[in-house]
Image (cartoon, rainbow, N blue to C red; front, side, top):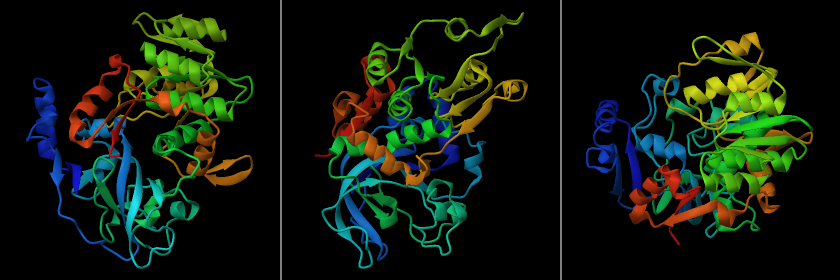
Amino acid sequence: MRTVRFEKNIPQALLIKALRQVWPDVVFSPLSPTQMVNLPDALLPGPRWVRARNLLCGVCASDLHLLNVEADPRVAPAVLPGSARMYLGHEAVAVVTEVGAEVTTLQVGDRVVLDVPAANCLSQEIDPPCRHCRRGDYFLCENESLGQGPPSVGGGWGDEMLVHETQLYRPPEALTDEAAMLLEPFSVAVRAALRRLPKPGERALVVGSGTMGLMVIAALRAIAPECRITAMARYPTQQAMARQLGADEIWANEEPYAATAQRTGARHYRGMFGQQMLLGGFDVVFDCVGSARTLRDSLRFARAGGAVVLTGIHFAPLSVDMTPVWYQEVDLLGLYAHGMEVWQGEPTSTYDLAARLLAEGALDVDRFITHRFPLDRWQEAVRVAKDKRNGAIKVVLDYR
């Protein structure tokens, strides 16, 4: 098995982080905690385990954060015990090639999507499961770090993977391989939209138009068609895609505080230290970047009583002015991946809802995927995915 593996070694990671300042390509060197490795073929570790051969896998921003050693060991998740290594790639679609004797949900030849790469009560076969796993929110599992049972081997950045059957999802046959691969990131966007779904006539601002920002625009247009969507997009390719996906207005070079005041009727104030404040603003803001600056601004772009949905991730402590949370009663909401939702009064998994929306054409999949690379060129794929000036939206590793 060829796979790209990240070793969780904090001293090594800190060294690479320091070296990156003068040697950016150190993340591709033998010093890096991320390496392409050849593993011997292993037996299935249990009767409910599955071997799957990868077809496609997307390059996600969270993969790039790990590769570039941007995770700060002081963040809360770093406290948790875990496996000694991680395998990159979770936006994966694959074909089942082997099943254990007690697998009941899958058979050889089934096309599958990686659902929950992290351990949870089901994959660890813990009974009774925790409250989150009982509900179907496996990413919030309270037993994730117990380490019961064997860990999964391999991820989407590799030839194949060995996972527990409960970690896989069988997408509808109507979806192409490419649409099935986009199911994982699109389900995150759907969950983000549902965290504070704009009402008819409300104004939503999407900060950042990378993969996630564009998918949030598509999700909002599909499930909240009567809201008004404004997108902040830096690059021409992103601007064109945001418009195609349903954004009513695109901000490229506008000063965002002045533009918010002009478009929403908010009052705009400037302080003596260069800080800015709005009274009024957007009903809901989706921060799809997650930096200290975008979160600070997003909290100020929201009107009193509005909401900010933190969709982008940053693996480091942030220094952010939180006063709008109490002074303007702005709700700050987060989300982690996908799980169970309530849609039109009925419980449904985010994957099921996202699959339905993709089948209905919520995304122009062919235009959304801009670059493809074989696994042997994974370093080139990473470089393209990092540099949005080249027109990249979704970069894919293609094994077919």
